[in-house]
Length: 640
Image 1 (tube, rainbow, N blue to C red):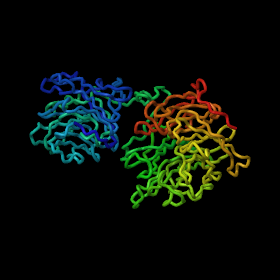
Image 2 (cartoon, one colour; image 1 turned 180 degrees about the vertical axis):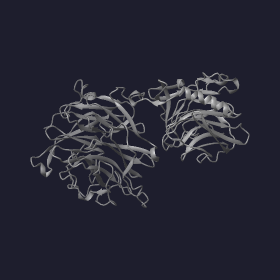
Image 3 (tube, one colour; image 1 turned 60 degrees about the vertical axis):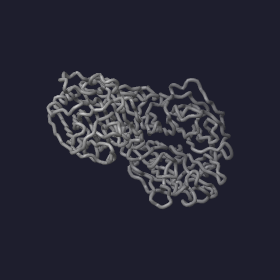
Image 4 (cartoon, rainbow, N blue to C red; image 1 turned 135 degrees about the vertical axis):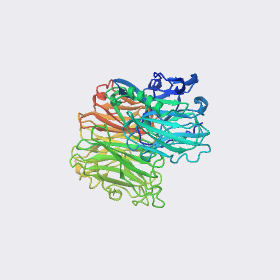
C-alpha cells in the first residue's frame, strides 16, 4: 500500500500517451492496460478516476481510482478534435494498489507521449508498492529510469540518467524494463517523429506491482505533467514494435495545443460565469515553500498587477517562523505572472531568532509619485502576536517594516523600520502593525494603511496609519473601538464625502463583521477626527476581508459568506457607502480564507484569495457584481 505523505512540487508539464486500442496488433504485443483520454473521469476540473479502455485478459478493475491532491482534467485540441488530458501539479497523483491493479512479473514496456515544461523535475510513474521500484523520473535536466528490489535503499536518490530533457517539446518515450529476477539494463527510448534514440541504464530488476502516475510510491517528488494516455505491455517490446506503435501515436495526436483558459473546465464550486477568469499563481510546495498565505494585491500607476504574500517555508504556521514576503507581477491583467521574487527577508540563521520571519503584508501604491510600499510585521524571535511586549526595539516587540519600489515593483529597497517613529504609538503597547491586504490613497494624496495594535493589557484594536508626505512619516489613528468588541485585521475605503469606512475582524467571534466610520475634523492636516459608533453587518467567520472603492462609485467587499466556516467567498456591492450591501455573487464555494481586491487598469476587478492550498487570482467585470444587486440586505445604521 502507498504511504500517502505530502509530495514535493516539481515543475513539469508532461503528457503520457497511449492508443485507444484501435490498432490491429498481434496477440503477443497486446497491451496489458490502456489509459486513454476517453476513460478520464472528472467533476468539472477535478479528476476523479481513470478507467482503462483496453485490458489484457479482461482484468477485473485496473482503474486508477485512488486520488491524491488535486489532479485536473485539462482540455487540449489535436487534429481539430477537443480532448481531455490529466494535468498533475507536482503534488497530485492517480494510482491503484497492487491488490487491484495486479503485478507484471515477466518484464514490461511503458509507452508515453510527453511534453516537459521548463526546469521541471519529479516522477512520471512508479509502482504503488513497497515490494520494489520500477520508475521513471526527471532530475536536473535528465531523464532517469531504474528498478530496485525490496528493501529499497535509494528511493529519494537518483536513478541512472538516460537522455537530456527536451523541455516544452512533445516526444514519444518508451521505458522497457527487464523480466523480474534477471539482472539486466533498462532501455529508455525517445522519438521525435521517426527519429529514435535509445539509451541503456544499468539497473536491478523488480516487478511492476500496482501503478502510480504523477509521483513516486511515497507520493513525493511529484512531476507537474499533463497525461493523455498510457500504454503498458506485459513484456519488453522490440525497437521495431515500439517504433510502429509510436508512429501511430504521433499520427493520432498531431499538433497538440492547449485550449484557452476560458474553454477549460471549472473546479467544482467555482463560478461558471464565463465573465470570471481564474488562475492559480501559487501552490503549496512551489519553489520549495511549504505554504503560501496572506494575499495582498494592487495595481501600479502603469497598470501592472502586484501580488504579495507570505512565503511560509517550513510549515503553515503564523509568525514566529521562517517566513518571507514574496511578490509576483503581471503586465497582462493576470493572465501570466512573473517568477517569484523575495522582497522582505531577514537572516533566519541568527541564533534564537526562531526563523526571523516577516509576514502579513499589505501593499499600497502612491499614484501621484508611482512609489509602491509594502508593509509587514517582522518578528525577531518570539515577537509576533503572542510574544510581543511593551517597548519599541526588536528584542521587545514585533516591528512594523516597509519596503518601497520606484520602478513599478521590479526592485525593492532594504527594510525600513518605522516602529519607533510612528506618531501616536504608545511604547507601553505590546504590538503595532498593518492590517494585511492593501492600503489606499485618498483623493487629497494621503496614504492610508489599515492597522491594528494590542494595548498593554492585551486586547487588540483596529485603527489606521496615514501619511501626508508620501510615506516619509506615519501617524496612527485612535482605536476605532476603544473598548469592546476587540478587533484586529481590517481594511479601509474612502467614502464619497471624504470619510473613511473601516471593516474589522471581530475577535469576540460574533459571526459578523464590525464596521465604523471615521470623519475628519476641519483641520485635516492635523490628522485628527472622530469615529462613529460601531455596528455589525454581514456574516463573517472571524476572518480577514477586502474592501475597495471602484472609480465609478460603488464599494466592493469580499469575504467568506458564513458566520462559522471559512467557505463560500462572496463579492458584494454597495452604492451608498456601506449602509446597505447586495446579496452578493458567489465566486468560489470551496474552503476560502483571506482575499484582497484591486481595480484593474480597464476597470475590471482583480482578486487574489486563499483556496484549498493555493493563492488563486480571479478577474471579473464590475457589472458581474453591481448589475445583480437585487434587494438591499444586511443594512447597517447611517452614521454621520
